[in-house]
Image (tube, rainbow, N blue to C red; front, side, top):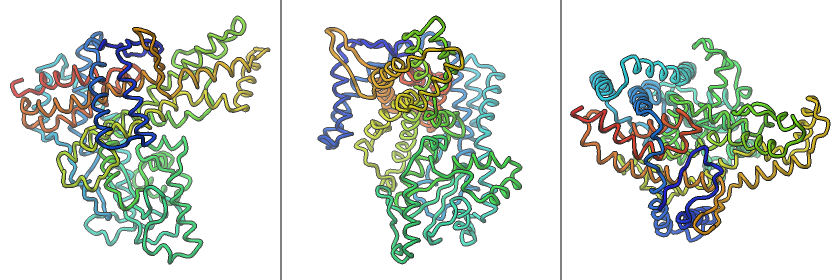
Length: 569
């Protein structure tokens, strides 16, 4: 297959070699198979998937990152190693953990890197010896990581205070005031206290409640003994768990519906007194660290959320990306796009259709790397989960999945809907503008206030509809044009993420094969390092690097780790 250039500048380059048509045809069939339950047998899906992976392995370009200095990749790896060293402390502090549910999996997970002082010194010496980075560079990297880790420390302080206030002591669970804590967070409820279980980690709080994960109906024996009103109130509460609003993206990694104003102000005040943290900040943090899980399948979600996503929110800046997605339903800003283009620019010398189209495209493209962050975040969390099952196959039964790819690092069949959903978020502000007369009127009034007398609203609506529904259509579109294949933006995005998927499979396998070449104290943490460094690389420049995660993994991660961390370095 001929290589295809994937980057920001080529996003609207709609022609690629026609040799990629079979790959896109297979991807389209894979989408239909997953979405429509068409021919959904594990064998057929696996066979189709394997063909796609084989085709996608030709997408990464060996020279795609040649314009970057090698030191930038060394810095990514050094930053990832520094995070890895402190990972355990920020994600799961055994002294703080409380679990009256009885998780079978949570406490078995560990970050495999040996974080003893001896290992830390050894790794630092190897980095200094094998890279262009200086001691000053490493100190700066460590300071940057400590800055990002402030959020983890904040969450930890709040949970420590909460544990004291509600007697959450694993050694004395009979003293725990689980029911009171639940009431202070979620308000009055009719649930019997014995039906409320609790799992607390360094940065997340999970209430484990008796409801069905699919129907969200009550799932406990004594439900019919509740009064009719209490039954209704219980079901209403469980139904809230099944609803989702745009602003809940800001509650990553838990996505709960709880908001500060719903909580008992006395609890907030008491936490503030113990921690010295501002009450407003406490309520904001509680929004993103408290959630509810279905009691019978807690382990299915617990490890994925704590170990898979916890570090993304607390040790990197993924949380801010999700917070931005939470704003996508708001009216678009007429001025602030990354290119600093202004809606008024479309009227400087009379109405200019092309400038308005470019303005909307810029507005939408600004949001693309933000909107697609959750897809990559899920991929990384999947790898974490797979690593655990690989190490503890006896516990896999507690983490059952509907995926046909249980034995792979990434469950790509479960990400198909995510690819479509999150890409659709990209043009949401423009799409909502098209469907909202009040938003169109606001734009018209804005232009009038700035001296535009005649506003061609019908033309603007036509262009906006084209941008949101045609240019950013969330369906795969590819047309054979002889030796070239015409594709849309979504097809390019999908190809990119299947290339990332293929690169993850290859790199995971290669990492396992490389372990015997590395220092034994470091080798067992290589998969954790792969996960972290992929996240660090993406976050370093999301707009550019979302297109090159596959190249980083394929052509830089393993060679760098071999050079820096090998036994003889």
